[in-house]
Amino acid sequence: MGTENKLGAGDSEAIASFVSTAVNLLQTDGETKLKEKLGALINSLSDSEKIILWEKKLENPVINELKNELIKEYFIVNNQRKKEYKFCPSCATPLTRKTIGRGSFLSCPKCGFVFWNNPKPVVSVILEKEGQILLIKRAKKPLKDYWCMPGGFVEYAEKPKDAAVREALEETGLETELRGLVGVYQIDNDPKGINLDIIYFGEIRGGSLKLSEEHVEYKYFSLNELPELIAYKHRQAIEDWTNARKLV
Image (tube, rainbow, N blue to C red):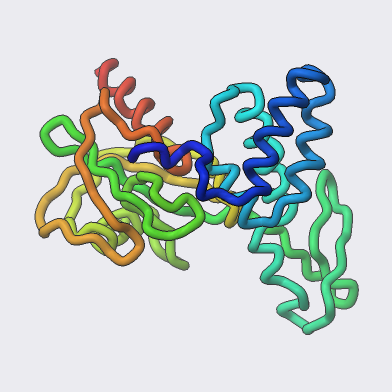
């Protein structure tokens, strides 16, 4: 793991400049005006630089929390799913923006189609073996080198439980039996878009562990020695699952 979560010499000059400027602004202006000025700095970065910065844990907790909040807000407005839609899928008319309720949405001025950009359902599974949790390390950006549970998107007309079993098999080669639901979590820290993660816990019933091309490493972690870089809301889910077991 090393210093994967810290800015180093290999990062772009723009990101290194952001960190230096942010520290100086905090010292000179204090927290009151910091958000506005950090927002301008973040907007000057490219999308790829924003993602790299989002994934880095800065030493100053105030700056770290604020830059995460600002980058999250940016990707909510400018997420990749909205970029996929330029023309109406019903009549091919160019889409325009329309204010509906609390938000601004891509819509068709001709037929009335609205791209609501709803969160997508995904599933994940906590797999325990001899008191340890199986986590797999992501091979691709965004969130490259972050650890996560086996999981993925629910296919059309597929039941969430079936999707969880299927994804675990596809990503790890393991056959699993689900034992219960941990909870449903809003994944709002993924630049690709907001998802709802339905997280189960289960047992390994067969198969041999073999990773898909989406991941580069697997490891069983004890609950008191989890890695620092855990993607999405999976750390919170593990903590919730652990606390729930203590109450039984």
